[in-house]
Image 1 (cartoon, chains in turn blue, purple):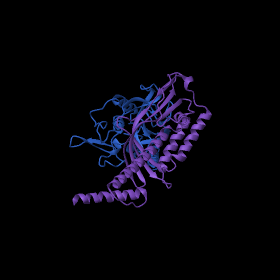
Image 2 (cartoon, rainbow over the protein chains, first blue to last red):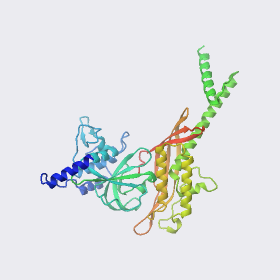
Image 3 (cartoon, chains in turn blue, brown):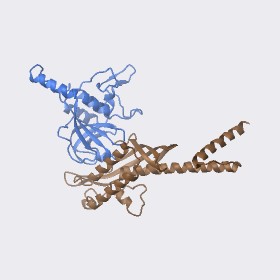
Image 4 (cartoon, chains in turn red, purple):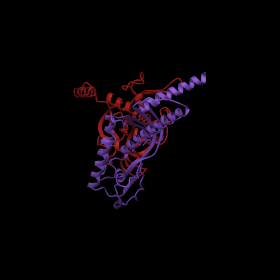
Length: 212
Length: 229
């Protein structure tokens, strides 16, 4: 509601000529290229949560990197737990401090909903989906969040990066890049890779182009 | 003196457990009686543990296989499918070998799923019932998906780590390998096969229902590291 109010207020100011429209800043293709480049490996400029026993989960860290490379600026930096913030930085101990929204899928989704312009939910699809295409509003650089439906809630995220053929099995349609089990151009619903597909729900999130 | 005190404590404990287990008082005459009680208590515990494990195994199987051709196959005699076996995949383009199930088969799969919901999951939490219902709905819908085919699903390599029984509740930790066998029709009309498999860390909560039977209450699982989709 707050987000809609902000959007309406900004649109009104732009219409009245009080505020200039902002140039598109989130370059979804640049984000997608980053995801393609690092889908199968790790960028040493960031921490790797993929092998560390506590986290053992690099999916959100990976898409956060791609979003940031695409021009989505970090937000805040004072709170690790607030989903109104999204950031990462090196600390004095040779490791990194970061917000939960940078590293936890459910928190990143919440951040994008809270933030303005942030992202806009584009509905859901079941994990049984074999449709070739995601919804029209979901394009390269947008995010797909996954709830496996086994009681832990949303626990995974990948970035849509185009369409074609999944190199692992040959399924065709829109595809995503992801970490955890690192996948390059995986069929978007992950059905050929997901034994939990009957209970999986996929949440689509379009990232607004006017994030900067 | 210390030894006899210890023995007294052991006897007292055995009496408490045995009395609680058998529901009646007992008199001890000799060491043989103590041994008998210990054995019967141990046997009762093993029996409960086994029952609880069976409850979790059945719930896990139903959660993954209900509404699938595997469930249909298991329901038909002979009842040999304690754990469903993964079928061999048909050739990539052998459409005729694995056509969509007919209406009668889907109706039977639906009936079996509804029966499992009313029996295996009769005392399950609303959250678990909701997840199982979602699985059944999506699985049955997949049977009529013109873009895909559903060949089977199940659980294999079920291994119990521990079972903790406390009064009327048991907590079970297990690992299980879940699999399904599916196909999608490609743009060129050929069928693309996939057999997603994952290892799950399962926590099951089993409760004694009002009729004294152990029944599944909740099942929560996460993918084991290195086993995520």
